Length: 218
Image (tube, rainbow, N blue to C red; front, side):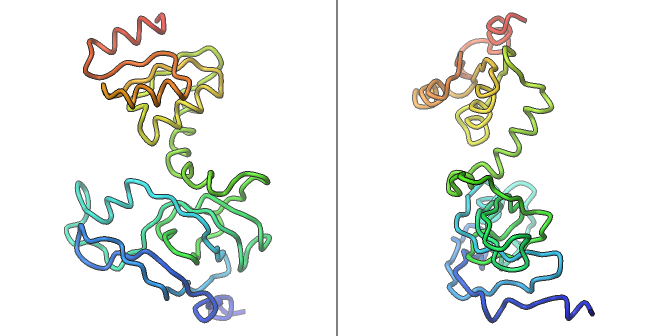
């Protein structure tokens, strides 16, 4: 079989909506209702996206900023994390999957390398899985390197943020004690305490380093 024969086009079958950046920086995503899926290669899967998360990278692609190219890459479909169902060339067509770590999940039909797709656990809500694919992975990796375990103290900076609130929940689930650090806003403190934080310090109040060391008895 030649490479051309092994590559199957999905263009005629799978067209759907997508959020596309088309103009200069700071211009909004535009909804295009007739975006076709790319050609599906022998090592790819075609996924029907049901949910897509939004992270800071999608805003950075839209608005530019530090380290962004002077000329924006356009057209560009946003999205770094999505949950959907295999419909073509999947290991088991019809199974729910997550973990699409690639641009392009702001669309209905996405072709991705099969090695970038993971099977989601049975019974897990796909909508709940979507937000943790980016920040969740980053915080889990940090947790493993830090060898978080029962009884240890963990200090989490920006604990009310997107990564921080996940790191807090993971650390508590592993039996660790959490010192949360963030701003003086009451809603940030309340959010962290509601997640089980053992102590909360705001950046504007005193010497945080000495306070954290005192609390953790180090």
